[in-house]
Image (tube, rainbow, N blue to C red; front, side):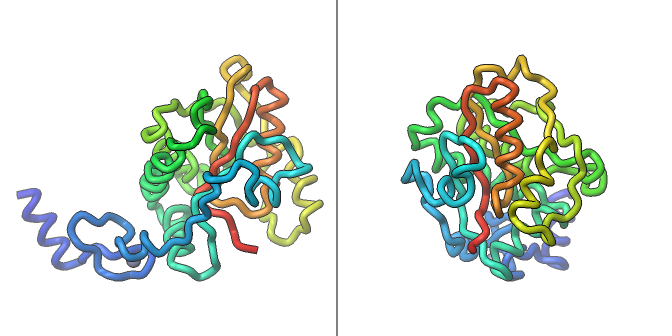
Length: 231
Ligand SMILES: [Zn+2]
C-alpha cells in the first residue's frame, strides 16, 4: 500500500532535479546524473600546495592541506543545488556530496593521518532559524567514506556575524576574530583534524575557526569544502 501511494505521488508530482529542474529517473535522488557529471571538479586533492591553500589561507592561518570538490559559478546548476541544500531544507544533499567526496579523498595521503572531522558550527541563532547546519551533513557523509569520526559539539560560534558581503577582505577577517570558542579542548588536544564547510569564499571564517582549533591544542588542521567560489 505504501509503495502504491509513493508510486502514485511520483506520478502526480514527479521528483525533479534541484539543479536543472528536469525529471529524475529511477535510482536518481535530488540531482540528475547529467547535472552531477557536469559539475566542474577542482581536482585539488591531486596537489598538496594547490590554489585552495595558496589563494585562501596563506598568511591567515596554517593549514596542513586544503581541498574543495567543485568550482562554483553564479547561477549555475551547482549553485541551485547548493542553495537548496542550504536554504530549502534539503541538507541530505550535503551528506550525499560528502560521501562522494570522501571516496575521492580517501585515496590521498593527507587523509591517512586524520583523527576526526569537525564541521564549522553555525551561530545558535542561525541554527534555530534554519533548523539544521548543512556542514554537519557534509561532515557525516565524509565520515562514512573516510571511516573517520565526526567530533560534534566541540566548538561553538559565539558571535553572530551578520552578512559579510558588504565588508572588504580585511574587515571580514577582523569581524571574525574571536567568533569561535572550543568547548571540548581535551577531545581535540593533539588531534589532526579535518575542518569542513559547504562553500569557500574568502576563507576568513575557516581561517578564524582553524586558529581557534590550533590555539586549543589541535596538532594540525586540514580543510575540505564542497565548493570554492570562482573569482
Ligand atoms: Zn539536473
